Every structure is written in structure tokens, then in C-alpha cells.
Image (tube, rainbow, N blue to C red; front, side, top):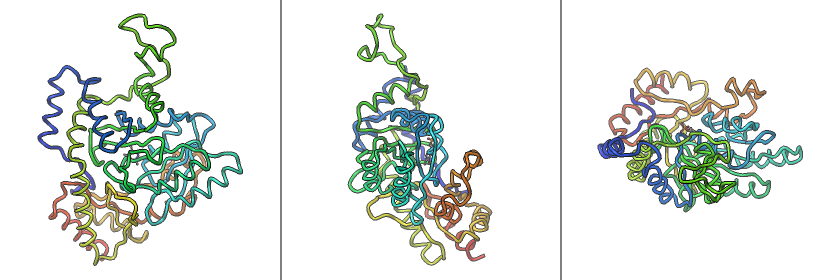
Length: 382
Ligand SMILES: *Cc1c(COP(=O)(O)O)cnc(C)c1O
């Protein structure tokens, strides 16, 4: 089976991890700050904190921005469930903004309409989480305008998008947001097995998230309510978690980020080749935005909804590990039980019904890609 995505692990990666195993620190050593500095330098942001997943990253980002009971968080229904669950972890409520039917990213015009209505009803969101679907940035300038007009905070869920750009900036620079989140799950652009990161320009948010990452514990006397008892002393000043990344993961991350640009360039080569080879085949594509350079985490095709299951099944039978991104979050049983209904977000539901993600990862060979293209050709003809 040719998977839809997979990691690339080199001899250098293995050596980097092995060196950590032979070192004094398996956790809380020098590799985590080294990885954080490498990512921060790459995307040009002041603060970067590594955590054990993007899910944890979203959780502490929401808490640092003060999300709690009685608050609303809005996100896109076309995402992984973690983009919405983070609100529920904080005791807040979730609502969704429908997507742009062409790109699958959050629709800024729908967001504006929904904000105007929410303002009248006095239930404006505290946080909006746009998701850079497939690695392509949302319209962040548009979202930032609305954020200042309506007074909400913005967390970019850039789990798909490290290495991508919006205008002249790397995604993660937080030029148009308060916090950006990356995922390093093995199917994503670079991997630490499990892992994530929060990025921000704001030193206060960074400090709060650093506390939340590790039990709310500080060893910094300036943050204690009394003088230190001695060299052993620490204080718990907030309720945090153990969301720390290990040294093994961070060493893998440092080794992987050296290849980030090469990976994204290779994904573009693969996408260009798919574009050419699929030109003669009757399938559609999500739109590409001219002001965004996608990290190309995913390469979805679109087929009529009535054909989708059949095309998917035929591709799987042909050994192509296609997948679908995503089942709309509001249609998950857990969310239906909160009162969401089929039909609530028509563009998202249509996007879901029509898309299939083809294999897309840097080590995909031309030969394997040819196999995918002939399987697609046969599947849509059948
Ligand atoms: C993968 C993913 C997450 C969760 O990432 P983890 O690191 O697995 O916790 C969140 N949001 C989106 C959009 C994702 O694709």
C-alpha cells in the first residue's frame, strides 16, 4: 500500500536520537531549547515552546489566552477534532465558521457575517482558530482585521503548514495572530514521532505557556510569592500539565528541520507533477491561493460526491492508501450530541463529500506516483 503520507528518517536522524540515548538527559536537557531556537529562527518569531503534541499546544494556547467557562471559541469544521476539542478542555463552548468552498479554509466573509450576528446577540468569540488546510495559509490579513474590529484572539492551527508562507512571512511568524501551533506527528511536514510547538511574539503569553507545559511550576524567584527556601525550592503558581517534549524527540526535530526547506520543495515538485499528469483526467482540485506558498501537507482531488466512495474504494483496492481530510467535526457524534446538525455548514459538508487525499510525502517516487495516477484514471473511468 502506498500511504497518503509518511515520515522520512535518515541515518543522521537515527544518529541524533542515539546520541541522546547515550547522553545524561533523556528529558529536560539541551535538545529541547535547541529545537525551539531552530524553529523560532526558521520562522522568525521571538518565542517557541516545544510540547508533546499539537493537541497539547492548542490546549495551553487557549488557557494562556484566558479561555474558560462561558467563553466561545470558533474554528473550522474541516479540520482534525483537536482544533475544536481544545475549547472543551477549557470548559468553553465551540462553534464553527463555514469554509470557503474553493479552498476548504475558513471563509472570511462567513466569519464576518457570523461576528456581526454574534455581536448583536452578545456572544462574540474570545478565540478564533483558523486552520491552514493542506498547508495553505488562510486569509490571515482578513482575519486579523476582524480580530481588531471585534476584539477576539487568533490561534493559527498550522499543524499542516510548517515551511509554508503567507505573503513574505513564514507561517509561525505570528504577524497576524497571537499564537501559532505546529504538529510533528509522523504524517506532517517534519516529525518528532509525537510532538508540537507553540509560537508567539508575546513574552507574557510565552511565559504563561511555559508554566502550563510543566505543572505550573516555577523556579524563578521573581514569580514566587516569597523568597526561595534554597537551591531545591520551586513553587506551583498555576495549574499546569506534563506536556513536555523529550530530548529524543527534540533531537529528531533538530535533525529534521535541517531538511524542512528541501521537504517542502520536494512536495512542490510532486504536486506540479500530479498537476501535469492529472490534467487529462476529469478530477478537480481545491483552489490555490496566490498570496500563500503552501507547505503542501496534503494533495486532495475532488470528484462528484456521488462518485467519491466508489473512487476511494477502487483506489484502496489498487493499493493506494488514499484518505479523506476531514469528516466535518460538527458531524461527529460527540458534537451532534451538543446540538449540531447535518446542513449547519453546507460548504464544509460539500468539501468533505468530494475530496480524496492522494499520496503526498517527500520520498514518493515517480514510479509510485505514476501508479497513483493510473489508478485514479481507472477509478474515475469505471
Ligand atoms: C494533526 C493535527 C492536529 C493534532 O496534532 P497532534 O500533534 O497529533 O496532536 C491538530 N490540528 C490539525 C489540523 C492537525 O492536522
